[in-house]
Length: 427
Image 1: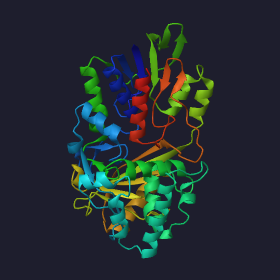
Image 2 (image 1 turned 135 degrees about the horizontal axis):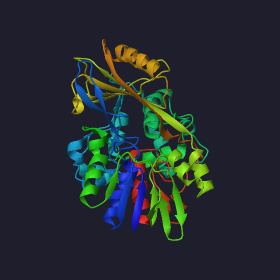
Image 3 (image 1 turned 90 degrees about the vertical axis):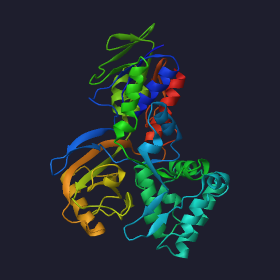
Image 4 (image 1 turned 90 degrees about the horizontal axis):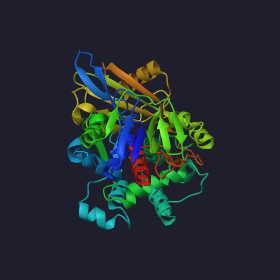
């Protein structure tokens, strides 16, 4: 069928690839001048004048993102080359915290559904944790497993973790929660948090491993997907914002052009605008979603480096970054560091000053110069208990996909991709 896909982010390009594979005639409309949506690349200049490609936010994938990895390979991206795979490592600069070992694949696969040995070994070997800390985590996680990783719909992550020691909550639960759900533990949905833990720790071999991009986010998938689409006869249009959608007896008209099917793969506020006259209730649900910001502060120093590609940081209101990345260790220029603040504020100058001080105090890195601070003010929906997300079906022949559409995942790349695959199958 002749199908319009509105939005060229990860959801839109993923949906287009799957729709073309199913035999549909696809047109993709993207309002911006580049592909990727809220996970895209952008240009910047280092203090010395060198031009570099950054990301609008430093992303991490995990091994449980099986749909994303399969789709990357489908459009010609080799995930083994584009992503650096490392065991889950939430150690802090002083070496304390949880780090999982890298088990042989056959052993990991054989034991995961019973008890993931990498997690057990990591907990028992966690540096700086007392036996009370370790036992509290083992007892609590065993209870979650007995309950099949389910909880009451109103429970927050903080509620779930009330029996954990303060150190485990601060050094494991809070970093995991804010990185996976972009919502702080006291407000985040316990149901979604447990679902992510189940998928990453118990269901998927290697699911807890971190996949750190060695290339910019555009090259990781959306740019390759656009080339694949063009090579397979799809129509792709950058810089073309769709103004209106109208329904008719024979299908839909997108800015006056006739289509049999339409997929809204744009952000929820844009989808709500386009669907307002067609499906007011759906539009209101999408428009009512609260959102959380993510800030990424890029700093540079000629000799700046981290001991590992990725470090967890102790986070306070005055030292807001939760994670630091050494882009020089991930295929980027030497001395370029990225500091990530999930559920962040929106004062760019303040965040930049605070992170420079945090890098000096926590990492001993003085003299860092700012490169760029990127704040995505509506990076994700707020993943709170009982949040109502709009369904995939907007109206007959009009679908929606994206990380905010009703589904099992929080607002992640994998959530966007899985939603896109489901929408393409529903065409």
